[in-house]
Structure formats: structure tokens, C-alpha cells
Amino acid sequence: MEKLEKIQGLLAHKNRKMTLAEVIDEMAEITLEKIDPARKKVTKTVTPIKSEKPTRTVPTQTVTELHIRANGHCENCGSVYLLEVHHKRPLCDGGGHELSNLLLLCHGCHRRESIKYFGHDKVASYNKKESADIDEATLVDIFALASIPRQIPFELLY
Image (cartoon, rainbow, N blue to C red; front, side, top):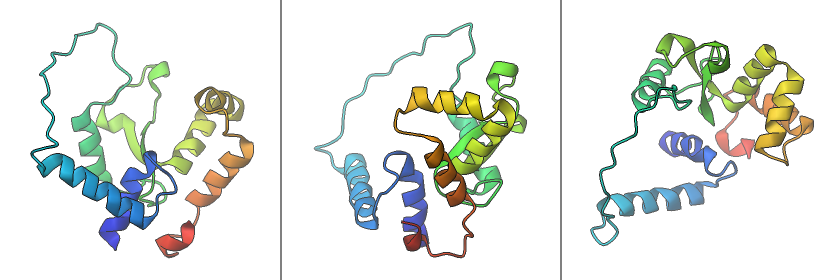
């Protein structure tokens, strides 16, 4: 059950309200994509174009090291759901992708840290650009979800 909950948390970016049946279906699909010869795709090797400007994307190796350091849990509240990379010093203020500048936070803790740094108005305006259906009430719900004690069974959260 712990493994299914872990996978459900990792797939939460794809679908926040994924049921365990949907998790199992997605796991079967991923497995078939990897091992079914009929489904294997031929991929070309693409050489990435080097850019002078640093990318906003955190390198995969750094994200992996961050997950290992945090043991796959939010470094603030201990949640395993909807984990995101947080820059202590944001890129816009000269921060980088060094492991010492990064935290692994759940969605609620990440929002809270962003509001502390940038202010509610700035974060709310960014949210409106990203998703027209997110409003202040949704942010409050996200913050409340992040503060739920981990002793509550995962199934009761949804």
C-alpha cells in the first residue's frame, strides 16, 4: 500500500485526484510501454543546443540528488504528495540550480514559501496566468491540505 501511495504522489502532477485503480492502470501502461516490444518507439538521438542563457529547468541529476537528500518527502512538512523543487534564492534574484539552493517541498509548502518571498499579490497574479481556475480559496485549500497530519490514512484525504 505504501508503494501505491508513493506512486500516487509521484503521478499527482498528472492527475491530482487519481484513484488507486487509476494508479494501477497507469502503472500497467508504463510497464507495457517499457517491456512490450510492439509498443517500443524508435527514438532519434537529439543533440541539445547549447545556450548562453541558463535554463529554468533544474537538471535531472540535481533533482535526483534532491529526492535522495529529502528521502522523497517534503523537507518542510514530510508529505510525499505533489513534490516540487523550490529555489531558496529564486532564479530571478540570481539564485542557481545548486543543491544548496534547492528544497524539495510539497505543493502547499512551495506556495507558502513563494508567498513569503514574493508576496500574495505576485503569487496570485502568477497563478492566474498559469491557471484561470485557481483562486484565493483554492490556495487556502492547498495550504490546509499541506497541514494535515501524516497519521491520517491516505484514502481519507480524497
